[in-house]
Length: 117
Image 1 (cartoon, rainbow, N blue to C red):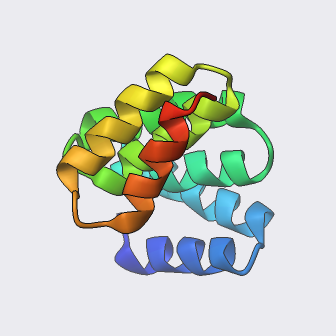
Image 2: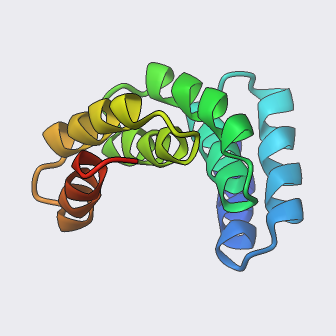
């Protein structure tokens, strides 16, 4: 994977240019199937685009490939919550906090996830 391509995809994503970001994430995955960062980016783009059903398997695979990445687990929890799977979301939020207990945004998401999805 090219770090430049991933950086460019992330920049498009941050600017809200989801179609361009998705195209670049997919190009990375075409060259490097299973790239966890591209899978995660594509999953978050799907979630941002209102498609949690498409985001969830991408983020699940990204979390499988990078099991110690708190942000990926947090994003997976967001997708699970959006899909209506409160139990799975709570597990993923807990995993994210366990991996990065000093990140307040993860703790806040866990607290919200414990309240139900």
